[in-house]
Image 1 (cartoon, rainbow, N blue to C red):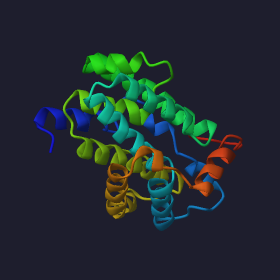
Image 2 (image 1 turned 135 degrees about the vertical axis):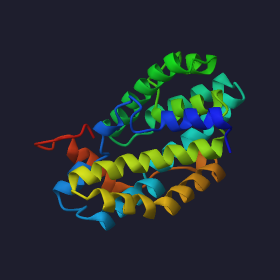
Image 3 (image 1 turned 60 degrees about the horizontal axis):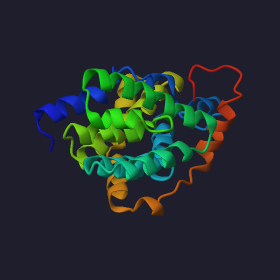
Image 4 (image 1 turned 180 degrees about the vertical axis):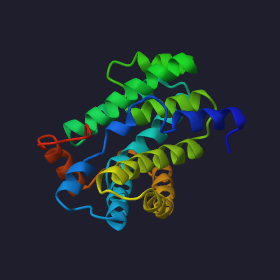
Length: 226
């Protein structure tokens, strides 16, 4: 478990109120709702679970683990390799925007509020920072253990999508919390899988989610950026 200071920082960084703009992204969910692929809480849970087990959350988790380990060892070359992979490891333009814009916002705020040389090193990397990489670097820099930091990251990922579903489906607040509760074992399993698998053995296969993201790019009316 992280100590009190590390836990405080982790809770702050992954709070819905942290100014990284997560509320603006739905990861293709907006299109899925419009087409009737997600109609209720059960559909919402299945959509998020697919992302956790076979989509961007799976790859994010692997990138987070690799970036945390590289930052903890102050291995600049390994961190750059992970950052380059993260920049390329996106199936659609909108999911690339989602990860890159949030990563840039997170890094800017966190460097000002909780400065650390490792965060400066992440900012100096020759590609836009991806969210899982910079959150992992911040966690390593400020003493947040990998397992706890990764669980919190995946919880925030899932909770943000459920929040979007509450607005889009729409779901009631109580049903949204029931979906979040039902996703607990999915989030834990995604964390454990990422900790156990080497980075070069990880891939994604959430074709329907990626198709929804692509279709969202040309959706006639949109509330979300992805």
